[in-house]
Every structure is written in C-alpha cells, then in structure tokens.
Amino acid sequence: MQELYIPLATVLSAIIGTANARNLLLLHGSNIVSWTYWWIIPGFQFLFAIFVLDTWEYFLHRLFHQNKYLYRNFHSTHHRLYVPYAFGALYNHWFEGVLLDSVGGLIAHTLSMMSIRQAIFLFSFSTLKTVDDHCGYALPFDPFQIFFPNCAAYHDIHHQSWGIKYNFSQPFYVHWDTILGTRYGGRKLSTPPKKEKVKEE
Image (tube, rainbow, N blue to C red; front, side, top):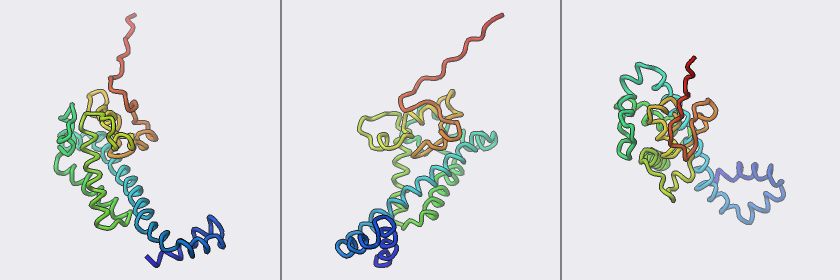
C-alpha cells in the first residue's frame, strides 16, 4: 500500500493544491491510502469490468441474433424460453455459454486487472444478476432492479417474438441498446407494439 502515497499525493495536489494535500496526507495519510487501496481502486476496477462485460455481451449477443447460422445452431436454444424463468438464465448451448459468459468474464477480469478474489465476486455477482433478469418478477426491493436499468421487465421484452430484435444488452446497463438504436420500451413496458391497420383501397 505504501506505493500509493506518491500517486495519491500527485492527484490530491492537482485537486486541492500542494500545501493542502501535504497537510491532509500528514494528518490522515494512512487512512486515505488504506481506503483508496481497499475501496476506491477495486470500485473503479469493478465498474470498468462491468463496462467491458456489457460491451462483450451486447455485441456478441447481437451477432448471435443477426447471423442466421449462429442463431439457428447456438442461440436459439436459449430462446426456446418465451417465458423466462430463473433457472433458464443459463439455459444455453455450451458453445454460447463458453463464448459469451466465460470468455467475456475472462476478458473483463484481465483488462480490469482484478485479483482472483475480485474476479470471484464479479462472476458471482454477474451470475446472480443474470438469474434475476430472467426471473420474470419485478420485486419491489430487489437491489438488482433498483440500481440497474437492465431488469426482468427489460429482458422479458427480448424473449417475446415481437421483441427479439431489441434489448440485446446484458447483464447490467442498457447504454449500447440506447446508443445503437436497439432499445425497446422502458422498465414498465410489457405490451407488444400495436399492428398498424392496412387501408384497403
């Protein structure tokens, strides 16, 4: 932890000035360094890993839908579930499970430079989140559905025949759906789009 003093002093000096940073570190240096080591750095690593995992999952999930071969031979297994349920969250073809979940988690872990303990937490947290997204319930005090916009209602739309080309984001945030125009509806939307009536001439 001692190697954090110099980078921390540099950052604090830039934010609050050299004299203030020196005084702050003299008074509370060990507590600030400890807190940075145990909470701030792992927090940033976790957020970055979530971003990497979301990016990997979005683009591969979308590819599995757009490529007929990949959909027919691999991803269609998961879409046999029109009504998602918790145990169905990981009901995938083995190839898709390895490529999306395992390789995606490994890339997120490696790029974020997490420790093994942090990686175990990330993988467990992601698995619980995926199960929650497929549970089919919007429970009132569910922290996963409070803090993450990608919730059960959002993912249920993707499992419907009318929503299968939307809401590819998983497991945490929906920014890629929003940016790339594949977002359908909001948290409370659970009805299919109305079909337009064709005028007879």
